[in-house]
Length: 473
Image (cartoon, rainbow, N blue to C red; front, side):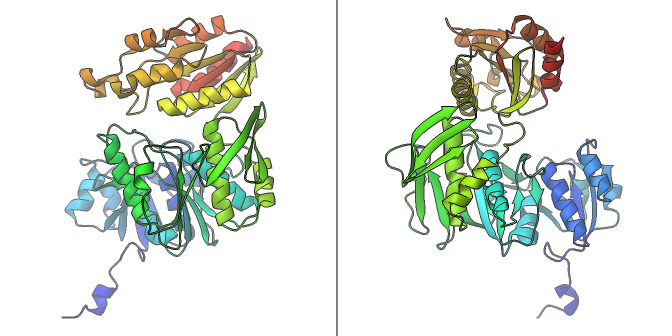
């Protein structure tokens, strides 16, 4: 029996005319909701924490965000988009399931409403995704390609983390975190990649992955959907990634600093304003320091070449790149002391950030002020690795482990042991619970010329401005 005309008109992800977002105050959710409203779709949304800047962003676009409640779905929208942070027990998720409403995840919505038909450039990896995607988006934008982009940070050149245009090109940060409570695959499997960068591959997200092998399986799924006319760009220096690269269904190029890479950076040099390296016969200068950022830049410029830009156009974009908020971002200087904000929270990212600061500010004393806040660093999984990374600083301060009550006692990071493991002849370490106590301690001992690097993936109690204010006094 054939489908009736009425059934053909049932709303789908592609043709929904009214969409409700559960968890609308997430940066990506809000950006997508606003873009769909501009297309004439009736948009509504809800969340638990409704406050600036996202509440203001939504209000300015005529979207009212309400606290969670079944009444928000009384109008039976064509589609309910359920955010990654939403769990079973949420009243709207329960109502959508109970009433058999049409629902999907945000990555599914992106796939059907924004990515299909585009040339999707997916930037993935444990570290450097936001920097690489921001740099790539700026290289394309600077040279007139007007790309769409969705990035998990705010590139200073672009002023926003998401934009949707009519361009063929779409730059998207490919997160390996799971999609939704009903879809435990990584978000990036929904992103219809034409070309993929895998910057690196390490264990992370201990709340959803049980082992490195599980993360490798997730990245293997991404590799499996790169088309034969696309490209896989992989970090050729990463031993964890190498077992996944024995494929022949699409072109594979390895980039890095080691001898076996197809695209090899050499002749590295650093100064306070940036780095310099050679790629083949071309010397590139980038306004970032550190080996991790060399690899980030390599990945971005190789994808920019893939998109048709020449090396002169690429260098022009590099020259004008203004960085990303919360990635070695200088928040200010007071009393001759510089305060830097960095999102690093994995031991590798912490290590690379501190190494880069040593290269950028040779001879100056670097402090690492670290908040164990991520789902992995609150646990003991990286007990030894955190100590090894933080020892690269001359002075270390570690704050109280965030939301400690959520972690079973036997799985928690041990602060006392961490202090013992960090302390060496060259590194002093202190465990100081709160931001205010840390400010008092640091300001009492900081000297002119010191670099205070705050390492956290959260707000850390506004410690950056508190340090600057106290130093100014």
